[in-house]
Length: 423
Ligand code: AMP
Ligand code: GLY
Image 1 (cartoon, rainbow, N blue to C red):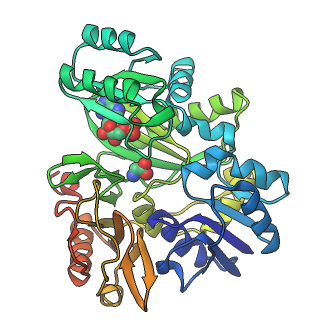
Image 2 (image 1 turned 135 degrees about the vertical axis):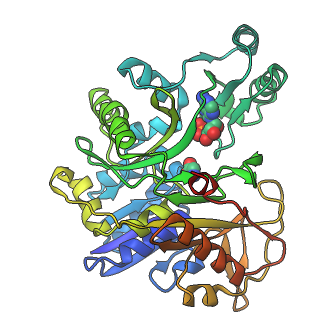
Image 3 (image 1 turned 90 degrees about the horizontal axis):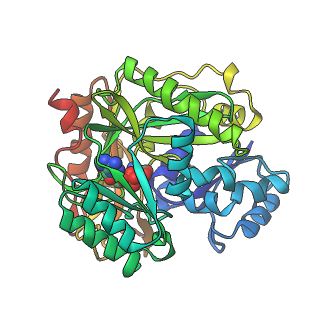
């Protein structure tokens, strides 16, 4: 088969790495891809992945059999619909189904209607009404911009002051543009977070191995929110019983709900969960694989990813036997100094080969080739991954890999997987 991966971050590198291992994969393309994928995929530039018509044309020219869409923006733009209209198969939800991530008002409404456990909430379009609600409910409380805001549209306000400021920023000063014309204000949930990604064909849903992300920039879960500074899988908080509860109370009902709403969901569904005293609750749904969750989940997948994705697209996931390794995987993100604020680009990266020789997987997130060197080109630069028999061992090996790689002003968290290790 001829495959095309859409996207160019660490998640897409991990997807490409796993797809390329399939005996079914004859040729792999990536748009735009990244320098880390060069040895497994032909990376293509020149067109934007957000231009669905151009992507359709490219897929036709290259005679692609299956397109795998990484990021949320092409999905919410309707890239899968456009490909489908041209008779090209794609793994990922349609535009209407991707609204489960694209609109928090939609996803909260869906959960309320179908009794899927999540935080209590109200929707506001007027700042004054939002302020009044916050004054009535008190802090801690959570303020969320309705639309896509690159993971930054959520403010967990520990004090009333912070909550009122957040309302001003989002609704009056339009800090997230149109994404903030409606806000969801919701109850603060206590517990430990976990990510549960799942394969689905719209009828059957099969959870992947669980994982946990570290969203705050600094050690001890301090500092600003980021796209994710590191992950590990499996997450010990997701015991077998908890995965079963999440499957029965959340995953299966939401897939049935999407079908009932005329928005059948095919692809990877990401459930961000809060494991509360009374069981798992939904923090958010994403319409795609997690980043950097994918970088630890896929290395533990033993089955053929191309076969699984074909089964999802063709509606025969129920017949698949999906196998996982017994061990654990850890990913440490190496970021540019200053991230998630402003940072410099163009720093030469050294030691990539040494880390690979030592057995690490190194997924590129923000790099570019320049004058024969690989240089930094983003906030999150690399995901250094190790797979081992235990989380402890995987942590040690991932950090050994990080120790072999350097670039100016690199920074990374030193405590990835601390929750699993302290159990
Ligand atoms: P989201 O973009 O919805 O995943 O939110 C970003 C982060 O904010 C989550 O990973 C949680 O850490 C936190 N968060 C969001 N909603 C809540 C909530 N209702 N209660 C507590 N924390 C939350
Ligand atoms: N790692 C968080 C996300 O992919 O949304």
